[in-house]
Amino acid sequence: MYSLFSFIDLNQFSQSDLILVGIGAIIVIWILFKVAKTLFRVAIFALLIGALYFLWTGQTPSGVIKTGVKAALQKNNIADLHDKYCGLGKRDKALCACIFQPIYSELSNSYSESEIRTLEKDAMVSATMNAFNAQKEVITACIKEKKEDKLKIIEVLKEQIAN
Image (cartoon, rainbow, N blue to C red):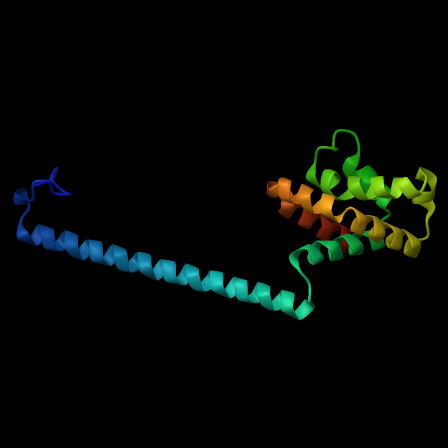
């Protein structure tokens, strides 16, 4: 008969040694369950907070990014943001490739370079948000493709809003 612990000769251990190992195993399992229970509660709490936030604001996760883009554009011209994040050697970065390059390209179809730089603030935000909406599928696909850079994109948008 094959035993799971056939490589261990249990006869070499005393009865008290086996009892101590059993008690130790029970304590380790109890600690693991306590830790898992705590982690599960924290995860449920975080999901609940996130769900309440989205219910309260009526937004979706992509809506949060859209709001961040709009707030960043109210304080900065898209041409300046494009220059800052898509300048020499920066075109492969997620922020340029996923956000500013598609929006700037869409605006370039309607306006010249000088018009983009001189549009009134309200007209610029409106035109840029229209470009954002037109390129939304491209932007979303790009962000999904560059998963590792999602948090960086959000952090930079927060930074632009704060400035």
